[in-house]
Image (cartoon, rainbow over all chains, first blue to last red):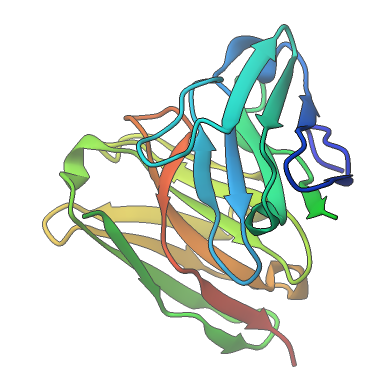
Length: 110
Length: 120
């Protein structure tokens, strides 16, 4: 069981928008920055969003992040078939003093 | 450009030991915390351990405490993970990851990973 909770899968058509939720608690999301990662099949994860809503250089503005209280959301607009991947949220848990991830969400672009 | 290259993975029997290394380049190694993150076959990401930028503090997930030791050699720009008393459930791809800052638990660069298989 992951400390952070994500839906196992989401799907949408090309060109559409999708959101992926990530639920935690006060000790993790509530008091620390959330980051999001994209993992394409057979590759290492890649940072998509840092500090709740910051896009690193090179990440398209189709990707966005937000945080409210103890939950966070990743949004992807203008879906492309190349966006099919596993997406993970992550943060630090200040009570456990460990890094934590969500269980991952598989995005299918139909 | 930032590069992280892991090595040292392989097949080991339960109860055995293995030492992973991560060679870092393209950034000032001494300014950043470093992490190991693993991924069991077909499973999600699991954070394993973190060492602060100056090596003074180390944190571990409960399942590896007392068995794994993270260390860094700033003179060589190398991160290491000594894994003892290995168990089948330690089987995973192990990624070395750079912290975005000194200790944010945001991983801005990842290595390609090295596979550790614990099996008799």
